[in-house]
Amino acid sequence: MTQQAFWNRMADRYAAQPVADETAYQTKLAATRRLLRPDMELFEFGCGTGSTALIHAANVKHIRAVDFSERMIEIAKGKADQAGTKNVAFEVGSIENVDLAPESLDMVLGMSILHLLKNKEAAIAKVFRALKPGGYFITSTACLADMMPLIRYLAPLGNRLGLLPHLDVMTQPQLRSTMEAAGFAVEHEWLPNRKAAVFMIARKPV
Image 1 (spheres, helix red, strand yellow):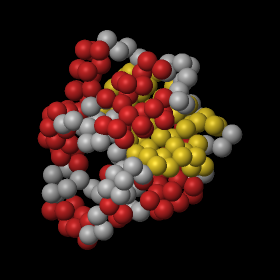
Image 2 (spheres, one colour; image 1 turned 120 degrees about the horizontal axis):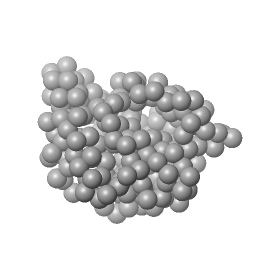
Image 3 (tube, rainbow, N blue to C red; image 1 turned 60 degrees about the vertical axis):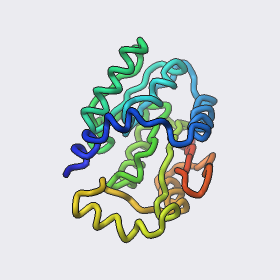
């Protein structure tokens, strides 16, 4: 099963599930909101069913949000229509195949996505190029090697059998090092608990 097929199949169930840790989610939203301005251009990759983009839409000029699951984007567009939100453009795509003009974005969101990429280094480098000097890269990433040490042995088997999406099994220090190697300064790093995703605010130097 392809990654796209996996997430298309999961989309409706994903959309119906409540947020696993609402308090942590609201904390991440608030930390992001403090950085937003009405003139900002945002890009989100791996946007899922669009909840985060739609929450932030009222505080920025425009958001372009992509996901490689057609069903996820279909649900996101339905949410935007229902809410009457006009400044978010949802489209099918991935960080690997979208065109991003150099130094054109004020902020990029990558929530719950870096651990699902086959080449997170290339994705982070692409984000760095697309951000304006001083722009922010906001992420929330499951560092699976810290959360579930045995997953490093199970993930390759699950990937080969098509039972799991691709999983990048990394530690929190490895994630931070990858961000810094791309040129980012990690300004904020928060782990709500040992089993939670790591929230990072990284900034492109001015």
